[in-house]
Length: 430
Image (cartoon, rainbow, N blue to C red; front, side, top):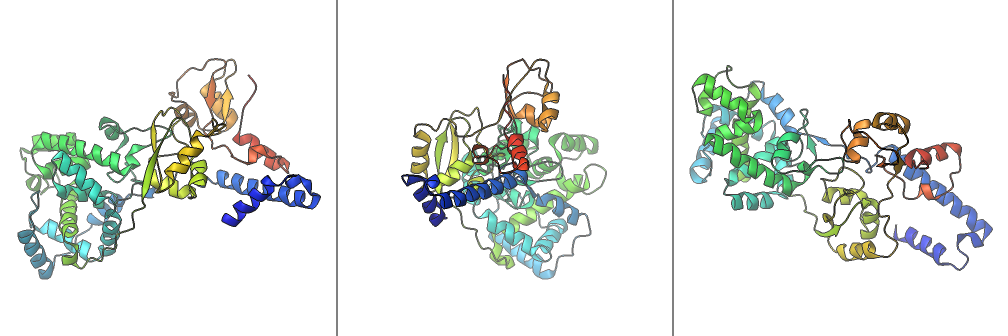
């Protein structure tokens, strides 16, 4: 890449430029066409510029597995857990009952690889989670809840559309201070989601004064658990879940799954777990105002777009939020100075070349969405509108499609390329 960049610099810095030599000009045009083609293909395939594809949440598979008959714990497992619970102080009560022991057996047998991967990934986040929980006065054992919920994957998405390490549904996330719009989803931000999880767990504990019931509520919802307590007259999770009458199967399995994971995670070597912590990338932050294309940031910092996305998993698109006045963007360690310098350079007003459309008389969100072949909901969300919002003539809308940084500035070599460029940058006359 360095050699390629240098070659381009030589072309740009030469007195006559690439057009000074006919043979060089031909090669230059071919190069531009190839770069444009790659960029158009990447955009068409949503290669990092549209919303990042989520990963499946582990909670779905774990609860499905738990629905089948769990393995019978061996005497070795029973002794290991007994010794562990006696020697290690836990800050939530963990009973050594058959259900917890069965899941310890499962995690040290068939699902050993799953737990090892999750613990290796979680090593990156556990110090932060424990710091937050310690500051909030929460049991540190609860830091391992994401091991079951998501295997510590920030971009995990369940079949029920819960997202992030802590698997928040959108409504619960909003209630606990997380933002969600077309540009960002803070459920995928590990630290912000952890602070929201701490707030939510404290709320649940204040309702039940019992961590087992609070954990059941984290899975099934507090209303369901409250109704189960009222119907059964029981306020002990283990009695409440001993029958199929009051709580759904997944909630009955969820609590012992969490407790089994805590037992192993607190002392993985006791259970022959091979934990290889995944290296934590070092980063620093820059403050940006308005929309900034993360492809530019990647170029300035010498990183890949994937690197910038991984550092900022809450970003759903190729740009920072257009209405943000002080958005904290993470960049690789050592890159903040150069990024700040480039942001401050004259002529960098158009840091995210967004596509716009000017509303004509009698047009609606639906008619414009059909004309531009975009989703009406995307069109509304990208402009902070509801799908039922009325539009006014002359109103400028952002088109929810990643524009090209290069192809729109070059002459297409074919009608197909021209159509592709036009489709990605629609600006009708006022």
